[in-house]
Image 1 (cartoon, rainbow, N blue to C red):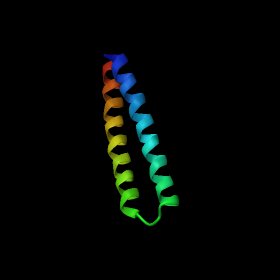
Image 2: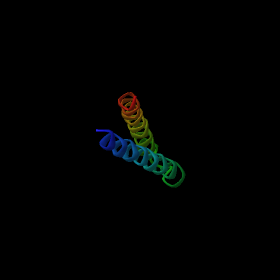
Image 3: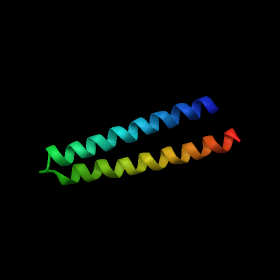
Length: 63
């Protein structure tokens, strides 16, 4: 169980980082479509929250 949660946390962190870069690049390059960049940043927040919940679950199991 710990291994699966560790992998999910790592994937969540990578997905959050990817969304962050996609949102930042979207702000700089495609300034004509702010809704797309806003949507990407909202997805980043959702992914970050899910990753934090998974991390807290991993910490609680590790005790």
